[in-house]
Length: 70
Image (tube, rainbow, N blue to C red; front, side, top):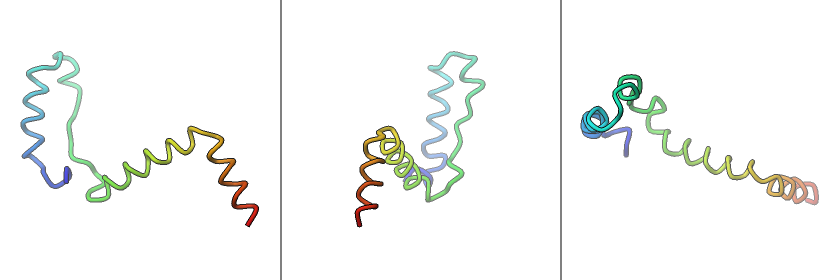
């Protein structure tokens, strides 16, 4: 999992960014480990699912309609 890899991924990523990015963005961007710890993966997945659900009013109205019929 990403949050457990620490410097194994972060150090090469930072070096590559400094080499390939424009100097101003490279100096202002911070690459850090997630502050959510081991929950970061599931929270991200839930956020993506909710984003898709709330993007479509039909999905919400269908859910409300089906709940009210029970």
